Image (cartoon, rainbow, N blue to C red; front, top):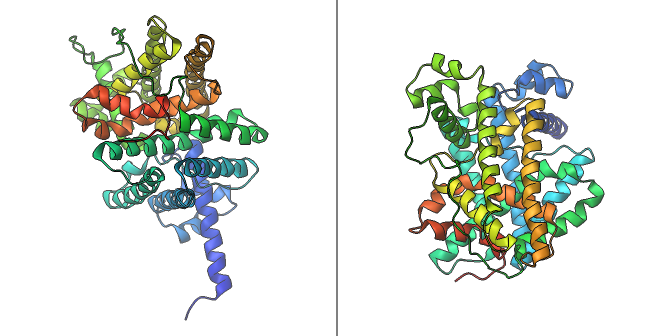
Length: 410
């Protein structure tokens, strides 16, 4: 006998409430710290009630990710229905800004950080990643059908950067009142569509001498450097939960005891990885001030060097995907450091206004777009490896900043 409609509706509502509560906890504390008991407590149930809907935690995590990606898919499809690339970009940004507005006003949101997908069982992982690729494909179609392989590579970069910008938006949106959201939305769209420099398409970076931020020098790395390198790569690839102490130790062919000789706990290692990444980023920024020429040239040189680290260096910068697993104090420290680095980028832009090399844009909004573009670049390593010329890969990827997403392809 079929279930009565009211029973089916009640089941669906309760299941949805559980998934929503889990998504909030995942964003706040990460997958590892999210338990069925905590989810139950968040919505006034007991753990047994939650296990009726999700017998195992991993089933709940998969449900959160699946519904998050479904929402992203619906957003991309709605934006794709617009007539022009600019209108599609504007709609996509508007929908994400509106969602954050509703969440700020009390609505439960389903945009959960997707960083731990690769820590799931392979079958679960493959299914979710295929659904995510479908979202990317929809966003890629914002720019039309590619006429050449060069166009395909360009549109792939644009779609990746646009999605990353919207996934980073929930973090820096906290710095704004919802009353300012409409203005911020307009500034995001304007920067993404038209780029940053006063002379559209200008891209002439200077090489920076290594100031200690590259890891492919002649000197043999210390064991602690190797711990940081392997941990950074593993967290970028597998997320916080997937980068277990056992896996890190095995990758280095050392014992767990050796790991704990250098680090009291895994969180200490993650914080060290963040510290090393942000120190490297900061050194590159400061070196950029010594580059002759305009402030756009200086900024180009900084971005070119940082993108080379993300695409080609044996030790890239740590992705902010590890952020959600940290406790609140550590998370606050990491976000504060990130905002300081973003403000330094804003400083380059403001100085560029004065020398005429940067057009009149909102420097605070643009600096966050720069941060999300750099942060997400690690995911494009495979994309970059298809280019015969490293410089061309970087130039193509960063064309979003140098000329915007509306510039013509080949």
